[in-house]
Image (cartoon, rainbow, N blue to C red):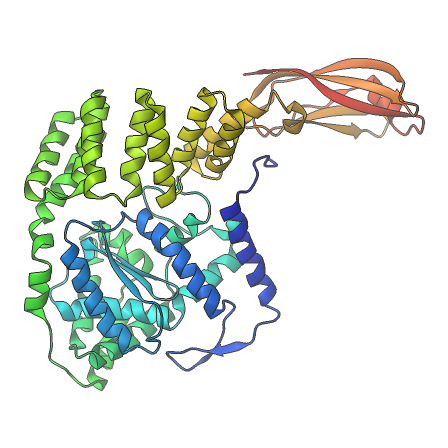
Length: 526
């Protein structure tokens, strides 16, 4: 099916990245890896690396749960440990940043130029600061050795899909993220190769020693990862292990590296325990929250509410728990209490897109379109999604502002899944009456007996029950010689009709005096 939906600016920019990288293949030479000293083919310049990291860091955070804001002191602590390691790395001049994300899945990742994130779900599995340093040192090497940039380079060159975003994306929002923001979300979970993982382990341990940490913590960490990957915790397999696969080989390699290094003894157990105390106390709250989500899916609203209240009693400053209450009230049909809960979620975490998105959709359903538009646009500022653009399109269409509605539907149509498909259908419904020939395209065919047939391509996202085409035979002077109507149908969305024999098309075939014109006369949707 030929797409009739314009590619928006963020996607065009990503395509430009892809084009420039492909062109660079024939021009690029080898560059020296700043960590290993090896000469390697590198197609992404340092300036591009900085730009990608800066542009994609916040969308990647949003797609993975947003910042963990309930305990700001914990974020400061993680940053301090990260900076110790960054300062002794092979690229201390990178614009490193370290954040803790509000995500229960144990994971950590690095974007180009040192943009690093660590989930709270991983922090609660660690035992001391040295193990935290092992995680952060590993991620710093990915950035310093340009592994993140090379992973991006490989995926873009391999994938020829729109915007080069064919990478796996395991988040709840994978079908909703649109435009250039999908790139950062993909990079956050894309898998590293075996060589890059071994390099990051090896040099990360060297950074640990330079910063004064016991390198044996990295060995312990890999042993823990291998043990947990043996089926005991599916969330680990889906999270950290999807992008950083553990193996006995890595344990042995880390043991060998540790034996070759000096052995500082600092573990930082007390420092780590104090810094993570609140997070560890709140683990039962997040477990209750996860249980509440499952109960809500089963429509056990009373049970889900009980879990939400349990979570809030343990950790009253967590926006996720109030967001869950809002979801429960909305499912019950109590929009007033749902809005109160979403308001509290926004107050506690005003920089997370989903809080605005949920409140915006609620206000849209309640008929408060002005408030809905404000929230939906704020949500898109933080992370553009097809569901927000679709809702904005619905609102503008209801206001009879067709041009604005079409613009929002175009953006929403870039998403995948059911929301993207619905946006394409809404776009077609709105634009089809104005431009039927843009979607319903007539093709002229001929057989060996010099008879001409007409077939109709339905390039809209809507199935057609019946389409009538006016066929006109015109001479070179512009005089209309004869008209006929040809009817096609049914035709599925993106489909093509059976060819219909046309007398006028046959007369025009091979004629130098006459030509054929067609016009969509009428159509009926299924």
